[in-house]
Length: 88
Image (tube, rainbow, N blue to C red; front, side, top):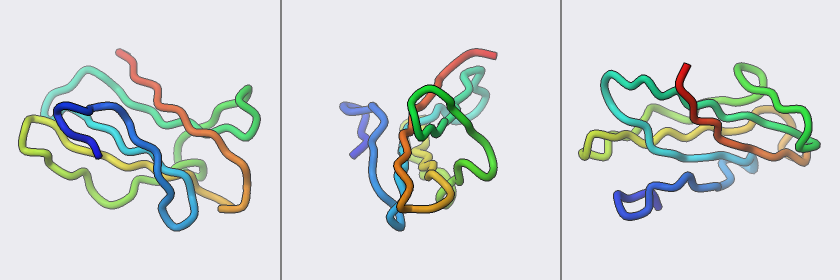
């Protein structure tokens, strides 16, 4: 589970599809987060049609929220997920 002592992204399956949960800072945040998906670890894609946000972010009560992003498409397909964190 994501806690202040363990803020790393976590991997799970939601409805048989891979998903990443990670903490984001609440309020004004210059950092951007992007979950990308790949079937071969060479070509990475993101956005609608490739990933879907699950529910709404959960406020952790410490200035952060937990967000879960799931791979879209056929649950039987082999897919890899990664989290890119960057400043625009």
